[in-house]
Image 1 (tube, rainbow, N blue to C red):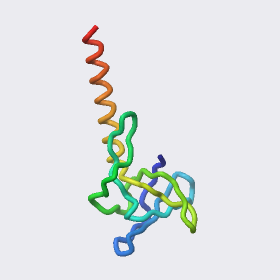
Image 2: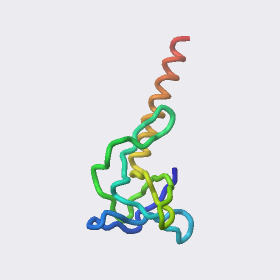
Image 3: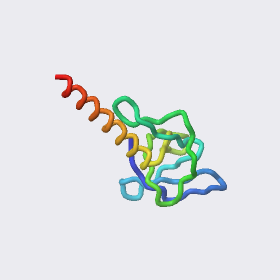
Image 4: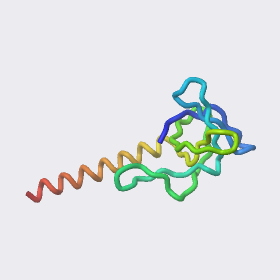
Length: 105
């Protein structure tokens, strides 16, 4: 997954552009491709649930890169804060499992 920042988003047209770490690169994204990010077994993953809010300029976005006829596209994508929450949930779960295993010995 890649990380970028919302550079532009049109609520009316439901699309925007994500600025990546590559200088001057902008990736197209559509609101309909946004998904919640949840804790998977080993890493955060995109869920089947749609987002509860629209992105705003400056929001950090995690995305997978795909292509459409015009070029690179972010699909699926989600909010970076949800990605971090999922990482924390996985870490906390793994830590609990490790502690339980050590106490059983």
